[in-house]
Image (cartoon, rainbow, N blue to C red; front, side, top):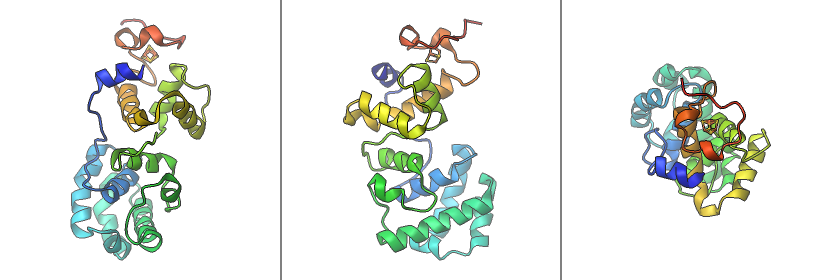
Length: 204
Ligand code: SF4
C-alpha cells in the first residue's frame, strides 16, 4: 500500500513554507483550523519582525496578534507561539530539540506537531497521526485503534523505520484527494483491491 502511495506522491512534503525547524514548528502551530496558504501569507511577516525564538519570546503580544490575526484564533495562537518561544529559549537555549520526548515538553506542542517537525524539518523517523491518517488507516485495515498514539504505534510496527517520515504526508494528501471523509473516490483509488472498507463509493 505504501509503495503505491509513494508512486502516486513521489516527492510529497508539507505545504507550509519554512527555512528551519523553528519556523516549521511555529507555522504548524498557526496552521490549526486554517489553511496552509493562510499561514504562508502570515509567516514571512512574523519571521521578518521576530526572526528568532528570543525575539518572539520578548515580543509585544498585541503586535503579534495583529500579524497572526488572519489565521483565526489569533489571541490563543499568539499566546501559544510566545510561550513556545519562551520554552525553546529557556529549556533548549534557543534551539528546537530534535527528539520527540524533548519536543513534547514545549508548551502547545503535542505528539502530532512534534512528529510533523521531526519528519519534515529534521528528516527523523516520526509518524504524525491527524484526522486523515486516522481515517485512511482505519479504512485500509492498518489499525483497529482510534487513539492517535495507538495508531502511530501500529504504523511503526507495520513499516520499517526508514519509511516512517514519508508516511503521514502521503496519507494526508491521499485522504484529501481520494479517501475523502464523506465520499471516498473508491472508483479511482489505487488501493481499492487491497481495501477492506465495506462502504466503498460506486462510480457516480
Ligand atoms: S477503496 Fe475507498 S475507502 Fe478504500 S482506501 Fe480507497 S478511497 Fe478509501
